Amino acid sequence: MSRVAEIAASLAGICARIDAAARRAGRDPASVTLVAVTKTKPLADLLAAYEAGVRHFGENRVQEAETKFPGLPAGAVRHLVGPIQSNKANKAARLADVLHAVDSADLARRLARAAANEGRRLAVYVEVNTGGEATKAGVSAAEAPALVEVVRALPGLDLSGLMAIPPPGDTRPHFASLRELAGSLGLAGLSMGMSDDFEAAVEEGATVVRVGTALFGSRA
Image (cartoon, rainbow, N blue to C red; front, side, top):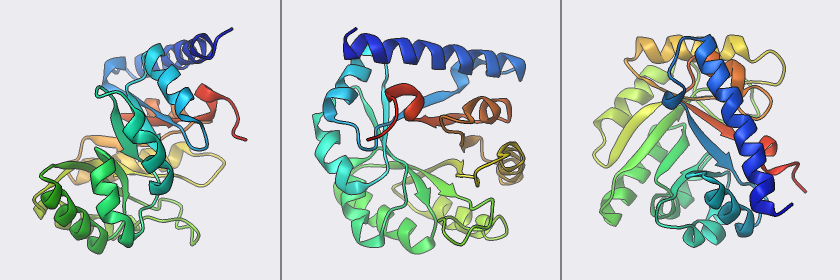
């Protein structure tokens, strides 16, 4: 089986599961965007996924995005889904269309300046550390409203919603709390759910799921 056929088969299975989860929740499956997370995967896999119908691609690191994003067709939407160091804000603003891990006012301002310099607008999500984990990026739920207000006021940035990477285990309560927080802030976008739990995320309102291993196979 060719790599395109292999990825297409995985994609069909994932889309069917998203469809079923959305329908269980009384949602339109078309309201969920699948971002193919391509961490450690070669550009050839991204191009095979594009051929199979994927249009949204996510990288965790700016350095990896630099080597792959320029090789994607014009119709692809480029997402940076991992934390962005302040000194990489300029590169991130050049490379990506959507940034999922804005976790400080300083980073937001740097991205806004960089977007202005590039003459473009960036869609962003504010990352919330729903599990209060010291090792993970993101603001606390209590800090989120203040950061949301900062981002909303910045020209060059379009605030899409909230994003989270819950601690391993039962992630559904984290998805539900992120949905409630977003609702209280008047935000519709929810970037949540990965290969192991995207169905629960969709049932809890995810508008974006970030799937890598289930689509491409395990990482090297």
